[in-house]
Length: 222
Image (cartoon, rainbow, N blue to C red):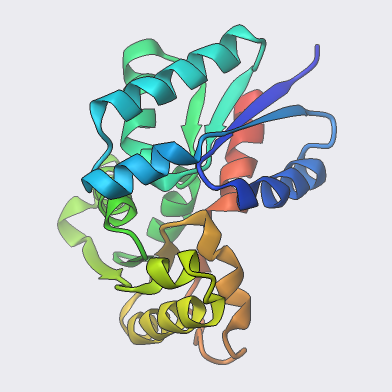
């Protein structure tokens, strides 16, 4: 039986990254990619996911499943709350990209740092950390340290990758001594970990969602 994984993206440039990961981790899985950058643009403009945006994502997921996908991975953390709702309401095999990352972070200790460049992503990721801590019976010991890196996303959109990366690195350096683990709320931030000096992390795990998200999707596919 052919295993099929559909990936839904809100950032076109992430398609090659996830393509490489799926080929590495699940070479026998057939993948499809759908890109709807307006989903994220609408969430950023509204400061949350508007209902019309959530409804469109629901249609994308439904169409992927109807077309034969065995599971759907939504690679945008800003859409995480919508994905949770779809899974709860329909029982669909749809995953948010950051859930596995958060579970790994919580296994490192109660002090969890969350770094994001968009408020529309920071809030759902922080909410996920709280929910997963509650599911594990560790909500009372959780110490959540959130950092919104102001201006970084605008710099990235303007093509100033160096300014974006420098701002995110600054937030990481601030949190590293205070956190048991740090999660990067956006898949697009994953490459920044490799730009830190080898001794800067000081043993603190800095986690990105893409690889862990694909690994969990492969687990769901069996």
